Image (cartoon, rainbow, N blue to C red):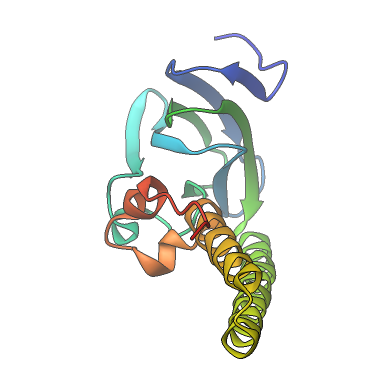
Length: 193
């Protein structure tokens, strides 16, 4: 292993490994969430947690599996970690990138409280954006119905295409197709009529 100098791995289909060593020098147990944020989709993430060369846990986050099978049901791969007093954990993360795009990695260790707060804020922003797109699409469809100007129909289709494209990339698959997250990603909505 060599230290990670940058979070971007460029355009690659190669499997990448990350090694993290976590030490708890305090008197109490510490619960954290390891989140793998990324600028692109990851096809599969395996997280191996070791303590003194003994495997404590193996987490699998696969784009083909339902969200219910993930350790934490979130858009980004995330796993809970428990550090007991005086322990040292070695965490190995195996990342298999999705098809296309660059692989940008940023492993972040957060408290559960901070993790959930950030997730709630992100979801609120996303759903506000989706709501605005739906209102704009309904408004322009209404104008098309009244004026019969095809430009408004094309703009309505464009807005719906943008909505579905963002839903497929931004975490909407967690709610729309939670039984098979890759289905939303694999669908292509060009937004043209």
